[in-house]
Amino acid sequence: MTPVPATALPAGIVPGQPLTALAPMQDVTDLPFMRVIARHGAPDYYFTEFFRVHAQSRLEKHILRSIDENDTGRPVFAQLIGEDLEHMTRAARELLAHPVAAVDLNMGCPAPKVYKKNVGGGLLRDPAKIDSLLGALRDACPGLFTVKMRIGFEDTRHFETILGLIDKHRVDLLSLHGRTVKEMYRSEVHYEFIARAVRAVRCPVLANGNVTSAATAVRVLRETGAAGVMIGRHAIRNPWIFAQCREAFAGRPVTPVTLGQVDAYVRGLYAATEVPGLGELILVNKMKKYLNFVGQSVDPTGAFLHDMRRTRSRDELFAVCDRHLLAEPDKVFSDEPYPGVVARPNCETPDADGCSLDSVTA
Ligand SMILES: Cc1cc2nc3c(=O)[nH]c(=O)nc-3n(C[C@H](O)[C@H](O)[C@H](O)COP(=O)(O)O)c2cc1C
Image (tube, rainbow, N blue to C red; front, side, top):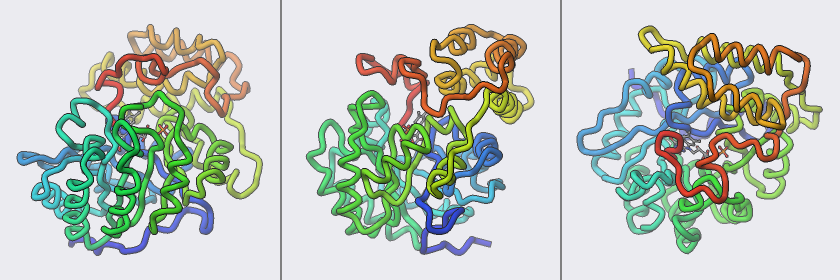
């Protein structure tokens, strides 16, 4: 039976608190990862990685799993990326046969391969196109229709116009990454633009970009007036971050995490990521993508990262965990990344000249 679409945003875990969401991340926010996050304290909302939509596209089965088999107890918003009105509305209708909390449109992906096709962040150059796409998707979605975007393409010249379109088409929730597409992941986050969006649009806004800890979430909410925070990379680093946000929002002290707990997280993630037939080296390499973020809070010199990046087998990987995480299991895992310990040097440093698609996709 087709689920009946909801027309109000799902309630958060703690009524009255600001909302939290796990940001959509391609090749990361799949069902196993969502489950691992739920074990450490679920966010209020999950978002799928994006479904690519074009003339020949079909909803990708592995992404559909994160909707159909979602047993985290929290709603999942399904994200689409594309620009063709006919196929985008077809995909939205197909999604509505699945238990999605909402259909979400990606207007932020900064990968050149993507924006050159005028999808994702590429749409931000063309308000007329956004107008027609939002209109078509709004008509196709009797339930909730949401948008995730950045503040502009190379500058913010269309920002106010696009916010007007968000209102015109009665978008139900706006997740706003406070950088332009051209700023990728490198610049400061322009929270003042998030504050402007909060004042301009009728729907709730989730503030996104560099929300590194519960304390940062509280500060960003104060600065922007947003309805909640959306957290991506720092939830990979620290999956306790949503539970910690709830503590901070309640005015309670945030429970620290120990290196011993981080070791258990890493081993749990390995087990969750393991699928029959997946070669050990592929799995170890997938783990390295997660551990690049985890390593930012293990030690201030980046020694864990250095050793972890050189491993080539499961045993070597866990030996690094034994050395760096279990040697002093009661030591505190830093709730902020250590300064200068960078997860992806080709992406997150200001002087980086490029980001491979392999490591950055949106
Ligand atoms: C590996 C990776 C994959 C991503 N994939 C997507 C995606 O599929 N859709 C999307 O809207 N944003 C995607 N993003 C962007 C994030 O959702 C988020 O906007 C960005 O990382 C900034 O938030 P953060 O500082 O909390 O990580 C991706 C980011 C990363 C790091």
